[in-house]
Image (cartoon, rainbow, N blue to C red):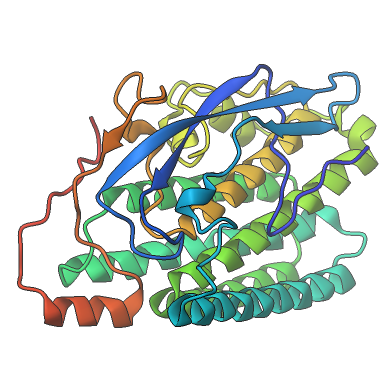
Length: 350
């Protein structure tokens, strides 16, 4: 049975044991409105069961239902208000455009790379790094103008780009960049994608994050199909040296940092062959997908390392207010309507 992942619903990657993750639920009435400074934390227990004989089936069971009282009952803006109805339509349009763009790119890649897996993976990983560069570029610009002071976003997005860079290095070591045409195509798509993402992120961060979620979703599905089709062959092949250094090295801080749905140190890959490498690359894409989903709710993202010791327990918490905004228009309006202040800045490390 195949595990699936889509832009709106996806399976959790395989884990060796059950674990707890903490979900931060803001106290705003709509999940798409600006987050309140104080939030309450709830424990969401997630159990992931893996069939080790096949190492393909992934079962995700959520034992805590969504808090409908804080999300208008359905997780969408209240339809009885004009603003909620308008925002709901905006979200539908944004997601429809994203899915159309993603499907178009997928059809092109399917045509060009029907039977050339490593070259396709090289192109995918070259493209997959771009959104995180774009996000950080825009956020650094906001910081320069004093509009943004949320270190967690920069930390997590950098860790995501670091992870995707190692995926790219793995594909290069496997020969995915051997042909000049593949390098030319991937690099020029990346340039176009960068400027498109910068513009999209400046106008609507929610739309940019959803588009990135769709891209990561496609990457997960691509690797998942490849593993199922060539699993036995991959088990007989050695793991690339760069994969061994990245997944089994001593310093795995950045590896934990991009996985915002789980506690640090809760995932430690075991790499014995090329099959294990692709299993972990696939699982990384699932973690990216979950992080991008969290980012679509403004102010909801937190670094896994930002919690105090024992912070994943069920206890209330309060986050200090920090300067931020949602897109270039909101940033300009906020800067013009509010007086300058000294925001509290999150520490980059404990």
